[in-house]
Amino acid sequence: MTDLDIRTLDVDEHRAARDLFLETLHVSPTGERDGPLTERAFQPGRTLGAFEGGAMVGTARSVDVALTVPGGVVSAAAVTGVGVRANRTRRGLLRGLMAAQLDGCASRGVVAAGLLASEGGIYGRFGYGIGTVERSLRLDRRRTSVREDAPAGGEIELWDFDTAVERLPGLYRDIAGTYPGMLSRPDHLWAGWESHFRRRKEIARAAVHHGSSGVDGYAMYRVTSEHAGNGRFSVLCVEDMITASPEARAGLWRYLLGVDLIDTVEFSKRPLDEPLELLLTEPHACRVHHTGDHLWLRLVDVPAALAARSYGACGDETVVLEVRDSLLPDNSGSYAIGCSGVARTEQPAQLVVDVDALAMLYLGAWRPGALAETGRLEVRESGALAVADRVFATSTRPWCGTSF
Image (tube, rainbow, N blue to C red; front, side, top):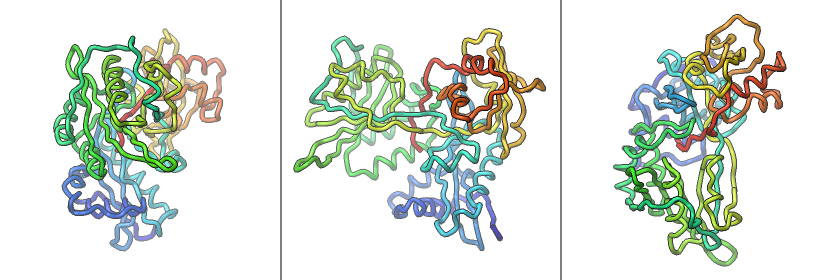
């Protein structure tokens, strides 16, 4: 790492950072037609470049967002565009970029950071842990439909893509936030969302649900074709679906399963606890084809993060949790955590956890007991583990629902 310089990029360097990142993914650089969207996707002052001998060899960027947590909201950085040139990997450049980015977040008072990991083995060493888990589904629409006793009463309106680009940001802002793990979507994230759909050859449109209290859900989808044996079949791909009521969920499913000339409906990145199969006349027509991590979370300010969320039905119980954080040592220490609040303490630790594992239980994706069973949490007082399970319990499994 001789002659390494890591600094915040100027706006006129953003395109070079984007092209470098795409190169690390083995993807061709964006064309001029994507220029305006690329520019909108970069928040000024949030992109880092690593330079050797004046040449950019690594980059990382983020966007300021709000993160829904159990019982509250915290400031966060949506980290993306992280990459190091192939001939400069395994030389400490990534560690330097991630450390500089976390230091910047801490200096701005950002409470948490989140990213979508291309490889799961990379980011734990920087304090990130799996914060949300999602599943993707495929349905044979010829074998099933929505049950007659499912919630009903709303109307579906169709928006073309240009209308969706204009109106969905406001709609998302009004109805999102029902799950811990959900992110706000500033213009920089919507620019990436728009670019994703504009790069596809298929027509994209939005089905919007109007309920008794107004618009309460939407599903963004496109239709594509796939080969099967000697023939082809059509797939309706739902890539972004947000609902604020059971009526909106059932109404959108009813519409999507009723679209003509469709063989299969595919729902990407859905919540684990969404009761979708219960809506169907034939649950066996629905198959889970993927379950995996989505948002990787990093607590930048552990005291602020712990104080911002609510805790389970634990009465007067508290648990003393020691946190270890080698990159941001101000977070290290012991915390007394309970329904009455959170405070630093000098009491002996009952449980010990590294900051990446703390992120895994923070939103409710994992129980402390599960982390202990897998060696991710050290138990120093056996009775404290059951208390921690009650303290960190949540009524809703976390879900992000936003790609970035």
